[in-house]
Length: 274
Image 1: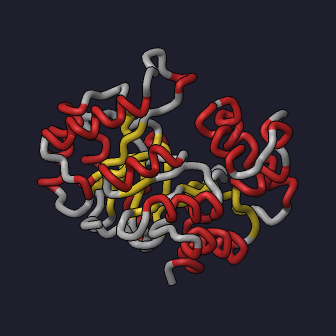
Image 2: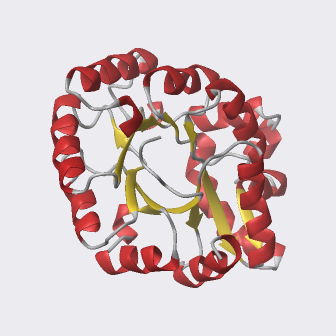
Image 3: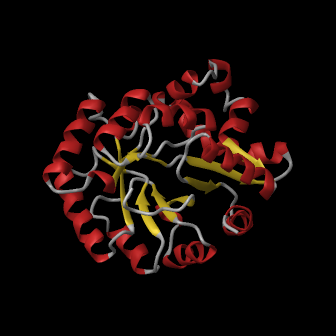
């Protein structure tokens, strides 16, 4: 990858990101901020965060290909990349069939969209795909700079690396709760995964990893919650993050579910970035 993300970044919904927050994360030493919540394809929000910081990379996690056409996104990409060279990574994805009325033949849509980005001069290594299943992971290897899987386990990371091969970015997102009491941690973590329990792309991925209908039912079993949401003290969480790196990830982006995420990011910076 031409863009240097470092090994550890953060993931946060656009609604929770300000220039001050981004600057704090940058000062802590994190390499990238992945901006969730389907940021608009004009990338103006990304540009504002880049303007508020000096070195940290901003990545979209992700621009929804049904929401913004490729020509608009490509023009925005070139504007932002020219203004902040080496600091922007375009993450794109197909979204969820349950959330998109026009959701039809998603794989074909991605292929078409990537071709349009090619025609508009968006470099292959300047973009990554939201990818969970083998088919889109292979597409990420062949037509993008890599993959950005969301809500996955180190075992998924290991399998994804095998499909991607070497030389392609693998940047999984990881849910985190900074809480040592397991019951309290699950009470915070379970709502963080609840919306995904009814989405077929996620549930299908978990079933491929060996989780059952019983694990997915009724808000998610403790086994599933514990697998998807790292919790504990800073050392325990850091070990879980390192498990992704050991399984083949190049970069892990951390989504903290605690009400105030900054204390957790500070504690994990001391463990992972020191």
